[in-house]
Amino acid sequence: MAVIKVALPPKEQSAFSIGWGYFYSISKGLMYTLGIFFEQFLGLRKSNTVEWPEVPATYGERFKGKHFLTRRDDGKIRCTACFLCATACPAQCIHIEAGQTQDKEVEKFPVRFEIDILRCVFCGFCEEACPVDAIRLGPEYAMVGEEGMKWVYTKDYLTDRRELNNGITSVKEENTKHELIHTDKLTNINYESDAPHGGQHKHQH
Ligand code: SF4
Ligand code: SF4
Figure 1 (cartoon, rainbow, N blue to C red):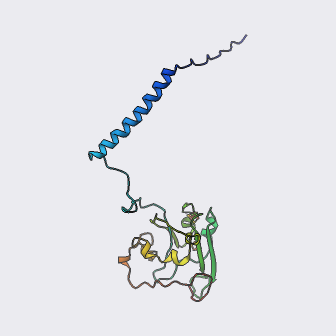
Figure 2 (figure 1 turned 45 degrees about the vertical axis):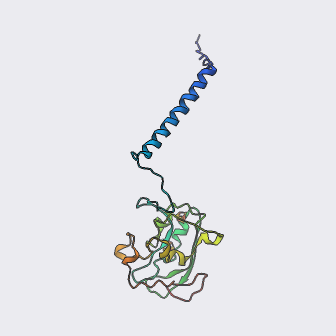
Figure 3 (figure 1 turned 180 degrees about the horizontal axis):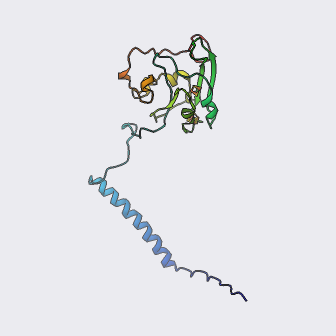
């Protein structure tokens, strides 16, 4: 006949034992916090707190922040409106309207290119999917907007926003397209938008 071992229920702890456990744990946590406070107060430990926005925060080089659309070295927008980024986007927040161009190298260009940044999860899939390195996630992390439409980034905004970008622009040249370009390195670039926002075909790609 099989013997079944039954575990005894744990002994009930006394109120003193439970109280002491709480007191010990809380005291330990407070002592640790106080230790860090005095270390920082005496300058023995560097504070990790960043007083943003007065002090800019620094992130790693691979940080994926606000998007931008890149340009070719002749100043034209690099995007060919292939919709691969919009297809790959899990949040479905990229909206593209394609137009024809007379440029023989490419068939189309984005008359309209918008990103609903409130839906974006900053996964970088759009960047990975793009076959021509036309969309990138930049190092900008500060995003503010007071109205709904401020959160929909238009083609113009994605392409030209030097003033918001700590000097980092969307302009890329063939041989430096994987590097961030700073404004002080730029010369003779036409920052005029290729086509006005809203689907008008006034300019070619
Ligand atoms: S980062 Fe991800 S979620 Fe945001 S637009 Fe690109 S693919 Fe979509
Ligand atoms: S950004 Fe790249 S993937 Fe997206 S439509 Fe333009 S060329 Fe295609």
